[in-house]
Image (cartoon, rainbow, N blue to C red):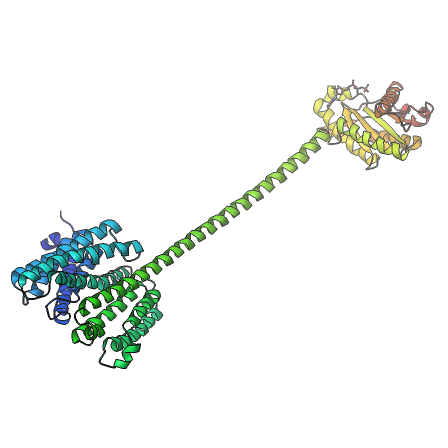
Length: 539
Ligand SMILES: Nc1nc2c(ncn2[C@@H]2O[C@H](COP(=O)(O)OP(=O)(O)OP(=O)(O)O)[C@@H](O)[C@H]2O)c(=O)[nH]1
């Protein structure tokens, strides 16, 4: 396919440069480590006290993706051959290379299978798998086979078992010291060095300075025999623990590596306390001593890291829970507020409903039911107080004519407009309601005969002088009013019956007049309007 980009080199299509880089890195590291081990850690029998190349390959096997591994193995084998060839016959060099690489491959396979593909020393479980499959299983198998090759080489009088053990411990020790260090640093680098703090480095340097001072004193028995009584290698165990607590897995591994370097160096120089006190077992005891420091320090660092991570996770959960609680609380508050608003709306609706249940829809004054219940309540109060009261029944005269001539809407307008002058003619505390049709009732508390007649007359006049404007029409109306005086005891039905009777009289006697049932004579006084013609004017 033609593209505008640079043509791809044919080699690149088949070779991944990252893999080449990893091969070079591992190959060179393996070779250098093998040379250092051969030159610096070989016992008089020719066996390395510490064999770091396997630790390096194991770290690479744990860090790199799966498809890199065969290439890294090839690089390791090549480096091993190049490093061993000058010292061993070719067949044995090949054997050593195959033993080392196959044992490390086995360890890497098992560790990755158990711990997942992105292995790191970040879980105690991962550390345990590493310890079992690496230093214990893979290194012991390598030692078993390697010891055999040594026996075949015939260069030493050391027993097969001792050879096996020395090889095993040398491999295992290097794995314990170097593999965690490389893996942790590589993963840290891959993540872009998060959580780096300068004081961490200062603390590390300070600790390592102490390790160097104590290491020099405790492994160098010639330097001061008296000092040995105080400076023993046991102190370094304590420093390994301090490194684990303060510096984590990487710091603990580095500290252990430093202690190991001192121990091996002084062992080979012959100044190590164990060489002086127990020469026949010095090598194995030193390896065991170092292995214990490594396992304790790195294991403790892992444990602390795991606890810290679990604490962080707990904190994260706690925060998430808090956030969720807050969210829930807010939701509850929102809901409560909404509920409050709904309740208020409901209350308003109820109020409106109660008001509309008590109100006459057309005129807006009290309807029959509400009016009667109010009067009932008022009568009870008046009975107790021994006060007087009266009722006025109002009926519009010839109202039917308005409806018939101008329509029902005109009648409604009259009914609405009549309310205002009537309300003006009474006191605010007087009860005023529409009984239905064109009939209204008024209840006057505390009103005696004269007063109720006066009010009724005031109402009659107000209605008489009212002009209702309806479209282009001006409507004038009159009303007849029946007044009844409450006897201080009777039921309201009786009172209104009397008022109705009086109204009937008012109608009968010519309309547009007030008639008081209690005194038939009052008719003469209150019928000033009786001269008026009953009239209905249409413009
Ligand atoms: N527009 C309107 N008319 C109503 C309403 N309620 C009752 N009416 C009418 O009021 C009229 C009452 O007529 P009538 O009982 O004969 O009384 P009237 O014509 O006023 O005659 P008198 O009372 O004898 O003077 C009827 O035509 C009813 O239809 C209402 O709410 N609106």
